[in-house]
Image (tube, rainbow, N blue to C red):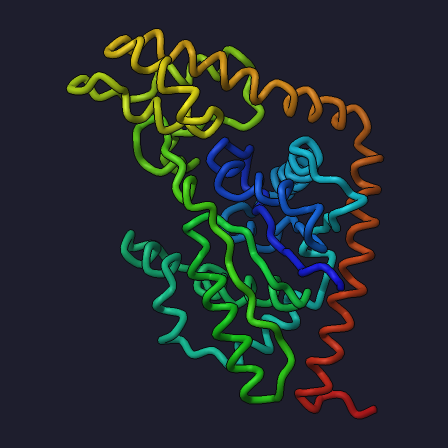
Length: 316
């Protein structure tokens, strides 16, 4: 029996933080053995945020190294770059002809941008449609995502259903997968960990950077347990393990922060060193990306041909 198909990806918009890892990236690694896995670098999505050649190139390479450092195995996972596979944007246009503007206006990303009175570009408005194309091209069964991306998977299902109803059965209806215990990873200020809030702990931070971030975590002086410190700590150690530590050191915030620093260092250091190793052989990393792109293109092109057949644009 063939494996189910998993697809997900990360936008190359800057260095990842532990929220990115626990919210989604860790799932890529855990699922790679049991699924036929496709993991992309979502560089076209990143154009909504980055419009600088050098920065984009550096970030794309950064995500590739991140993927390899966290333990994605190219023998088990197809790692590819979105912009290398033209059916992504081609299928997005097809979907654009089916999706209405009022429907997309309900998307969280659009509503958030609108609420901030931003001058919203079409890419931001259309983001869920391109994401639907990303997902549906690969006959995807499961999409591991953070809580903030759940709606986009639901939109992909709606678009797939609408296409199927209009042109005949073509696309699977994908399911999202969110780890309930880390659906939202807290930042150093207690809000959701986000680059835009400046409250992150970088995934590949050096020891001194880890120390600086942890010591800046906002604590609640009214309780014995520093809520924000504990919420991050339980990501890397079980609550059973932490119980004695936090009971023994009630109200001793400095000791508890120091314990978190040491545990984060133990957790981050192996990935940080592995990433440095891959940095020493960029051609090897790029070869992995090119080979993955070749595999992804075969799958995506086959699905796109099926779509064109259903549309009636193929005459032979």
